[in-house]
Length: 568
Image (cartoon, rainbow, N blue to C red; front, side):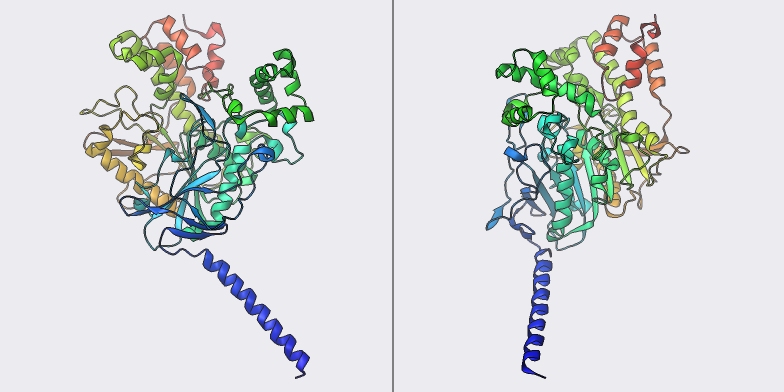
């Protein structure tokens, strides 16, 4: 062989060997090795062992660049590579939001918290969790994974995302010509990006990138439900769980008007326009000067907008049917982009949490006087009962009913009445199976929603229910079917079998059964009409001030908007 040919051959072999070495290095970098030090695509990350030495934790790991300055209302970009080793041992600041104590957090928090069992096992299923807070507040710390990842033998990841007018904004001046950015659904883009990061990096933590379950509670549950319709989430996860979710979308054109009205006072305050009417019109225009003004607003001022939304979509419209992120026909779409096994869960007294915060009851709740005033207590029970009947139906059966003809995967409905049938404790007697009733069964340290409730969850019946609830979740996370040995059979929902699994417990043991769903919004309205537990005047006020305008109240609002239909 000629010398030059030999040199060429040797060079080629060296190049091939080098490529192989590069590939092996890349592969090795994403191989889980038990311990708190992990090498991701973006660099090394150091976490810690929890106090019980059974769970590994990484806090505040960025999945995207901070959406500041020119990135504020844009698609999220991949994070920069870390220099050295990133410290992931402490919670990062929450995304900026307005709370009862004022504005907190910053505009930079697109991070995630990661938990896994302290074992050498690889290919673990992955549960990605979106927190609640009406897409206006809350944080990834809503649930910690220390208390349950070992039992579920899974990786748990909780995600921070853009909130409020920074996470959703339909104003046309923000349009860039990119159909995803022009959607206004920036928070959903963040969530999709977090799933991309998980798929790219989770093997480094011992997770299976092909076994991801997308989950969320409250607003997070509604975001998960919206993602089922969305083409940008296609193939990003294999299963889904919506805790207290339901189907909520809104028209982007109508939403523009709400946002313009909310921001108009700032425009006048800054001297840009003389009146709010002028500002309202100006903010709806697709002009560079409007865009520059919006980008010049501080995150603090933006976070204070529309802070009274609670569960009234009209006050803070989000989840826009833009046609790119969410189909224009929303949940009426005939083409669900993500036909994956789905669990939908609801407490049976969910509205108690929202009734407590409504102005009609808030003062008497805060002072404790409601327990001393039989008339006011009866009115609260009325609002709790019927608001919860509507809400739990909305969270489960009505969603399954709408999806059934066009959704090609099993749907498992479940309702949790826990707290309504207890005898030896009283800490749940007022609120019942409240909004978030399931959370302490996962995270026993949780104090996000109603921290005063502790005794009921320590009863033997609650412990039995927790064990079985976790068993159902474990089976679902691992294989897509919640059923397993020694568990009550959980059949999937269908038009021919509109049933839910009832997850309850008395003081001593779990009480779990399948139950056929027979309730309707119309039946609830008839019960309201027949209810004589409160005065007609109070009933009229509660229907029109407390229950109205909620995500679940369309039929109620339609009925009672016609005075001739109101019973004498």
